[in-house]
Length: 244
Image (cartoon, rainbow, N blue to C red; front, top):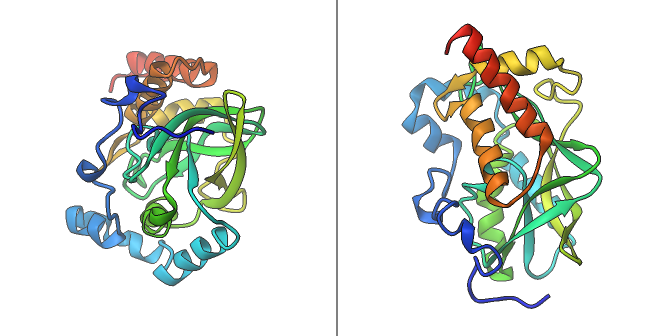
C-alpha cells in the first residue's frame, strides 16, 4: 500500500472532524489526570487496572509486532483518537460488530443511579470504522497512551484483527468486548438499551451524545449503519416522550 505524507489524503473530509492530537483531553491520559480534573471520579482507583497489569497486557499484545501499527477505531477513537498518526483510512472489519453493550456506571457517561451505555466491539457480521497508522518509531509511546485510555479497567481484550481498506487487507490492533466482564451486557434488552442511553450521563457527557457522535462520524464517511441510526431514532423518540 502506498503511503502519503498527508494523514488525511484519503479522507480530506475528516480533517476538521478529528480532534487535533495535542488538543485532546485524552492526550497523555492517566487515571490521575482524570481524577485531578474530576475529583468525584476517585472511586475508580479501586476498579482500574494497575499500571503494571496494563503494561503487561500491552507488552503481550505487541510481542510479535514489528513496523508500523494500524489501530482500528469503532467508537470515540473515530473523532478523538489522541494519537500521533501518519494515515487514516475508512475500513471494514469482518467478523465483528459495534454494539452498545458497555455499561458505564463509573461516572464517565453514566452513574450508579443512571448507568449509561457505550459501544464495544463484539462478534458479528462486520463493522465499518477507521484505521489509524502509527509509525514504527511511535508505536511504544502511542500504545502506552492508548492502553491507559482503553484499558483503564476491565471490559476489553486487546486483539489484532483483519481490516479491509478497499481491496487492501491490513491487520489492526483493536479492543474486543470481554464477555466475562460484568460491565459487558451482551444479553441486554432493546428496552434497557434505549433507556440507559437516554438517561446516562457523566463527566465526559451523555450516552446519547456519544451515540450521536458515532452516528455523525459514520455519516461523514458515507457509512450506512442501520443499527446505529435505528438506535438513535429510538432513543430520541424515548426522550421526546419522557423529557430530557
